[in-house]
Image (cartoon, rainbow, N blue to C red; front, side, top):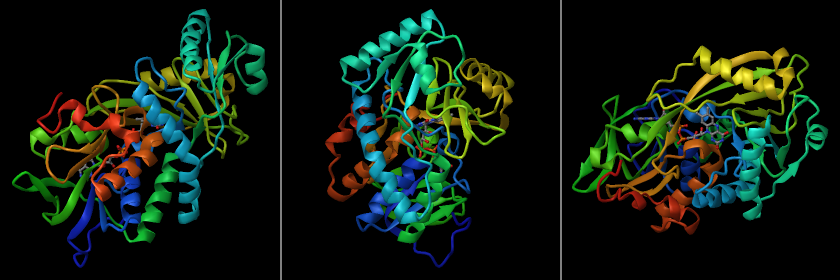
Length: 389
Ligand SMILES: Cc1cc2nc3c(=O)[nH]c(=O)nc-3n(C[C@H](O)[C@H](O)[C@H](O)COP(=O)(O)OP(=O)(O)OC[C@H]3O[C@@H](n4cnc5c(N)ncnc54)[C@H](O)[C@@H]3O)c2cc1C
């Protein structure tokens, strides 16, 4: 993203997106494709939110939790959209995204974990999801690098992964080519409000930018967007996650598919890197990498794939997931006219980005939220009548 605003640039847009993470960029792309003039603002340069550190698992089955049927429906829909989405993005940007439908293998390391994994697998089967219980021998046929002793696993062949940093680069390229204005290093500091309507924003450069609609796509910072009136700040909180990037000396990741236990997941990249994630911590906006977090991830990764011990530790990172009270995202009208929420995607923001982008573009274009994201309508938390926290 260009670091500075050019004063000759326009100051009025159909759509302004605050936040250049996966969600904001997908919203901007789809809105621009429908003919809107779009500006994307991000205070970081390049964008430095959760998208930069995410593992990029596209794993509706692996992320399945009891009592979240609406989220499952949305993540399954998003997973189905992904092959078409990345094909379009890669063609339009001429850049790769690292997308690969590699499948996932969830391993039970002991009897307790096996009992829990079977419980989840029963739910997967009851819902008709593509997941099969395999004994250890069959698991090892799929992934020979697995630890010699464990109690079985669940294979979900349709799960996939993408490299969120490469996807971001592709989205930025395609947006620039489409004429979307990308402004990095620009922080929104104040909302311009006329009666009940948001009409634009003021930035840290004391510049006023007007827009027909303002899309709040500020990830974990959406809930503390103090530039909005308090009643318009959605109930989004930061949930810290630490994550590691490793590389094998021979350039071959020690697994072909996502390999996960109760405590860690390992995501191979096509170039031989391996992502090990992630902790889940309620620490407010603290995003330090801790010795304890790194130790836990390495220990649990090693328990699954002993070859991890030989790998080079390339990077350790921490990011802030945008959590909501019910773990569903917030997609739809906010508490001011002209304010659209596209935030709160918690653990699945990379997976849900294409679905959310389409939905926001549809809402901007036709005034209606598509049925596919109806469950994410902020109205469920009474956001249009003040904030439920
Ligand atoms: C460790 C970890 C692993 C994860 N793994 C996965 C995974 O495997 N699969 C998956 O689907 N999801 C995963 N997630 C979740 C996913 O990363 C998030 O849900 C998603 O990235 C959220 O995207 P976003 O665009 O809403 O926010 P972000 O990517 O956080 O972007 C928000 C942007 O808003 C900008 N901003 C904030 N305030 C302002 C302001 N006032 N003015 C201007 N700009 C502002 C920030 O600089 C930031 O760039 C993971 C998250 C973490 C932390």
